[in-house]
Amino acid sequence: MSNVDRSLPPPETKSAWTRFLITCGYILAVSYPLLALSTGVRALYQLFLKEGVTDYLGPAMSGVAALCYLTATVGFTYRKKWAWQLSVGVLGFETAMTLIVGTLSFIIPDVIGSTAWRHFGADYGFFPLFQPLLGLAWLFWPETLRTYGIIKTAVQPDGAGS
Image (tube, rainbow, N blue to C red):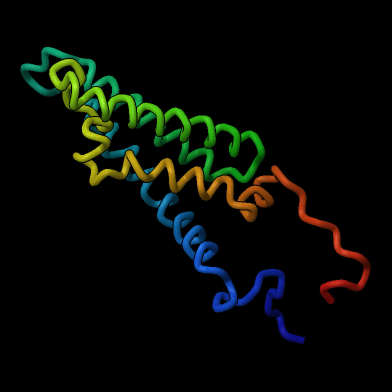
């Protein structure tokens, strides 16, 4: 008997969508902590160390974005139902804020200032725009739902899968 795990189909038989979402999971695991660190450091620098800052709305919003990214990272780390719910809520909020602030940054740029969500995250390679959408797609993927205990795995009859 070999010790090969036969619970998942071999990679070559997985659909393109499944391979894409598996890759998204790896990207999110790396990109969210990095984005939390970069936006958090930027916000702290602008709020406390940068000379001549007169409008604190942009740096404060970057701080909120950093907290969102950090919270999402925690949600991705723990494979529990509460963590899944936390991540879905945070990613929904993050998506809404990116769209709202991104739109307002074109309409009233002087009020919005420099924030991670300005111009839909252009300063960060548009990661703030597409990253939460990838995260939501990954969180609602059936395999992820099973991993977090949101949906139950179907029980196979005795002898099936042997």
